Image: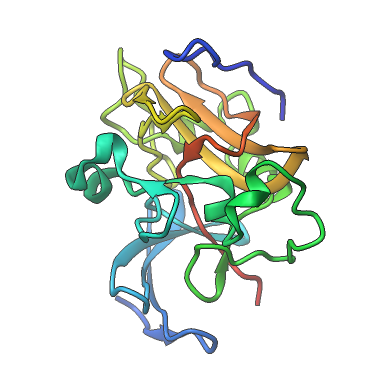
Length: 230
């Protein structure tokens, strides 16, 4: 995927019920849109998420909303968490100590890395995001295919062809300010890009593509969990 420099307001910027053997999370499946859809129940707090199978991958079709340290609702509003899910710093998303926001975590990352995801699910790597991108048409059109059909600024809505339903959540920057709701969706990957930085996937209202960013781990972005391979 090509990289795109971010310009921000901050100047920097029911068919079957299956119980997962490792965690008591459950999923049901049906077919809809460009992918197969279903649900996931997070046994930790009982929240139910939509899921979608696109090609060989099964993704959460909603952003994770599981409360842990170093995660926030947009503008600290519970209503935002209900609508958009939570925003996580990278180490928090990965289930690691916050010290790994500024140091390399290569020695402690597993493959796959469950992180903050429910049992049987994991934080997707940059390569796994690329697999999704290629399946939905490639980098130049993946953004339109994955974005929700409403909520994006300035006629920037997508077609949501596959039921991924990416919402323009915005972000929390490393100084603690919130911004860009309506304009951007940013999703962490499990892949570090440099000391203190990790790759993320980025959609915006003004572009049809899906882009790779390399951002400081102190930013707080959305999390989409990917089901472990069986």
